[in-house]
Image 1 (cartoon, rainbow, N blue to C red):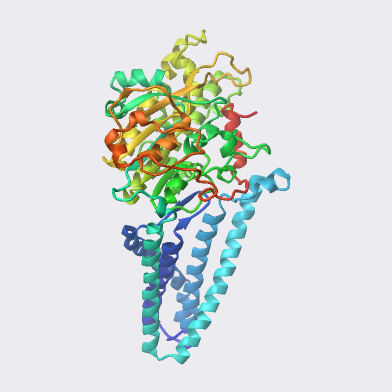
Image 2: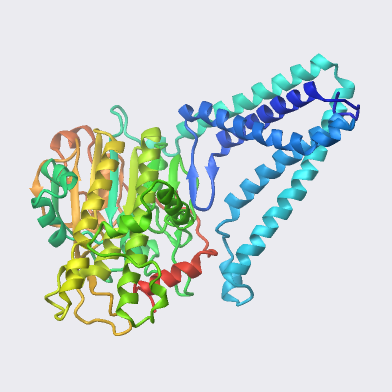
Length: 593
């Protein structure tokens, strides 16, 4: 009845011992690794916090116990014929190792970083790369799992031959205790480590700040909806704080501006100038040459929580959580499936934004057919924006209460999408000749999307808590596009230079309308509110006119020459298997040719 090859009949005790010890042992081992390293992929990174240790261990124990049962079922017939306990044990360990390696490899390599070089060389298509990557994951996981199981089986047999029965139990208990200790200490170290603690303010607790980005939010649309009472959450923070235009800087390119908002620096300093770089690769975090505000805050040992912010893929290690701007692409399908199973399919939800009926089979019509064009702007920009914002807002409202980050940053993009494509139906006068039935069907989409965004804002504010200092910003405003592109006549809304800023919370004055804020001022102001030094090489200023004097008295302004290179990370450009689909989406939106 041991792993050294003795035979067993029936195998009841062996089954239960293998089931319990394999499931528990793997759960503790993987838990220890997560405690030390956190959970990190190219698309997101999560640091375990103390309150998560027990639920994580329970979840892992359940999963691994079930997998152990699968391994035992595979060898049930052999045991009945008098097979060895060692064979059953190796089958279980092979199952557990293989499943663990498969999950690890998928998380590590999907989307496959660096693959753009193959795509651009016309060696392999993106689909071929994904198929090959999946095949490699399956084969490598299976072979490596079998080898690791064989090695562990040999080690266990060796120990059993030299250590008495009770000694094995004692050794197992010691290893389990050591794994648990590593898990607990790892979590404590990762959540309590400081990198620039000598610069952090002493005394009072660091005030919490949340930056909520709403791409394309425009006062000409937002203001009347607030006044009409349709946006109660925007109204609430406006009444309690300061608000006004946030002046942007041409060219009005979203990734360029959102990176400026996140760094307080010009494109010449942070390196993001367009949607793609000179080689045509969609911009990503490896191309940024300045420290974003969340890296600065994290350098003081403070937890951060960033969700969906433009140009955050691939993620770096953080204290807290960082969910990149590409994760939603992998979740759109599952989310639509869940919504269908919940009784209200995604298409039905999209129809609630207007007075239209979506035809899911519209692609049977020619591309120049009006039925194709009208259904396509529902199927692509409206669907893309709705699902993206739904995913990232849910991620943020789920994780934020658990981590209580000192700095939160959340980015919502759907307002920008719908204003590009539905502007002429909401504002038909500049275009002329818009059919009345189309105005009736699609004219309310933009306003209704603002209402939807207000609902998401309310959920975010609730998750953030009452002590939060929130700054809502947009990268630019919107206006009618008078020089329509004959190749993309559906693009009827275009960017305007004046965006939105709303600042509300314990640190901010109820100042009402303000003027003079720019996209360069957000990071300096957020750092100042938190009591952290502002970089002298940042191109913006602290908006002291909206901060309470009592707050400044407790957290006086301070400055450092720069946060680079101490906080800034060494960068090297990479691509991914998602780049083709990103380029196609950018072309559909008219951002690139």
